[in-house]
Image (tube, rainbow, N blue to C red; front, side):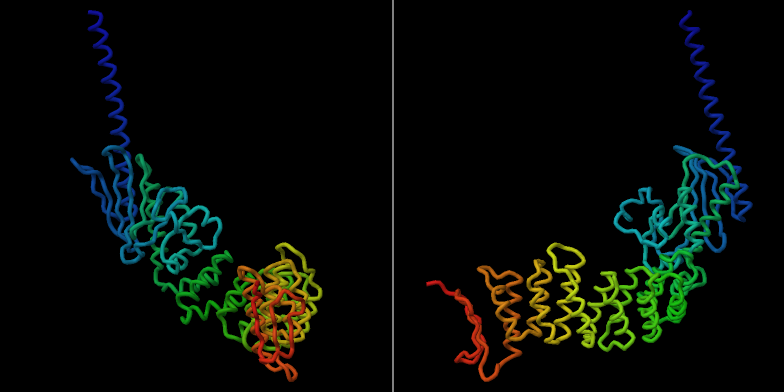
Length: 457
């Protein structure tokens, strides 16, 4: 009897508990349904109430985009919203939180906008030019807010899903409007891709964004009117990196003037100034560029000196050979891998490119450097401009049981000298590779330079 009473009591308690849970669930569902209904009315959308076998939903158009949503109570309560933009947003565009799964489709692809804060939070995949054109300043802010709520972009639609019911109509209205705003941004509105890129290149507050939009214009719409307009504006940009990029796209006169200003401005980052010097190199440099190269050779910044030396070589600016030699005399030739080594190698290469035999003593000195990179460049240069005097120092470098890179270069350099010199004051040049010292002759009977390998009996 007692057991029966206990069983009845437990059953009653269980019924009360289950009834309470069901009633609470029903109350939440009703609140969610009412919130969805009021949101539909506010947004001007159609509301379909809950019926047997179907959940309440909303549908219709807002600002030209198809909007749909559902408040589900199937296996679990959740709210799902969609703003479809087929034919207006490329289906390959995928946007979501860096912490979301989106997972494998964007694991190895993430377009950078040039806005560090945005790029740290949001992962974007899609056509470079479309992504950069559509993600202006306001668009990035809207996307960050949407992604923070859990929204994403995929399959030509802006999507949102939240576990649990949304019982506040204002929350649904705000979310739908944010989603439509993102869809409008990604669809570019009335602007073409090139016009949107040009606007971002001029007006965005982030220099990195302006730069990437300018680069995208140059890559995808370089000859467009929008590109010309953007380049003209970018030449006056407050950021030196943007001006540098614009100079490469501008007319020769406008671009050269900007590059000269950048190279000479001590307030500009050294890396940008160095790139400006490299960009000034050409087959026919004008006197202003040559002046900029000469000034950079006197700089205390090794990076500027290096850029100037390489620009002089690329431009074949032979009038600056003497200044390059002066720099070579100042260099400390040391072992190891540092700025001096890189600069010394560039000096050797440039002296060879300038083609002036006056550089031979300096190149012979560089042969003594412990850096293989410097010695290789000195050997190549001597092959271009060296005289008989260079052959004997090159000869030991050409030996080896197994010809390495340096040995091969030395042999080619000796052959290069032979090809240039031919007759030498009535005799001809002959080089004999022998174990005896002085394997050099200026009057070989055959009249030709020969490089004879040692033969052991």
